[in-house]
Length: 191
Image 1 (tube, helix red, strand yellow):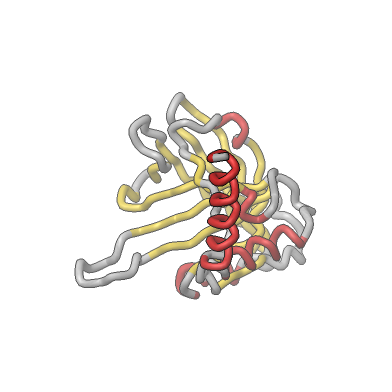
Image 2: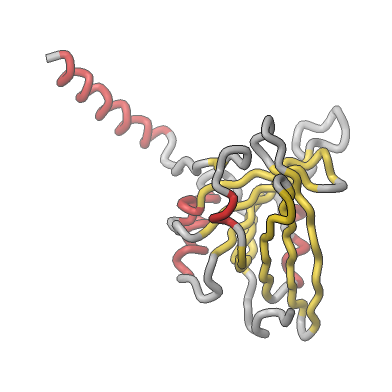
């Protein structure tokens, strides 16, 4: 009898919780415990979202981006980005450290930045990943982070547009209403 009562309680609790908080809850991937091997290789940038336009404005000039994630040593990841801006291409590299006691990646040269990984299921995409960059307020009197953006990456360049739409929609539910999708009109950047 008590199992049946408990079952009904959980059902109604879940129902009412969805009424109060209809947003899906993304799953954070803890970098100190995740299987890094599954995230190595090529990723295609699809979209970025934030609370503010200032956090994503630099993506507006880009046509397409391809990233390659490599592990160079036991706790070091190198992310190489090939970006197309109009007819020009550029390359940039970022180095991240993984510390066993931390749940986020540490970007070399930016120790104040938190770099978090989220499951691609936020975009209803098991072959995607969401990368969040957060920097603390510039002044102690500021109440808002100086940077807080989420970026969606897919394993395939021609991934379904529903993935990006789902990511933007689910993000807007979390008040991340500023978004950018890359046009990918000029083709992928040459390496």
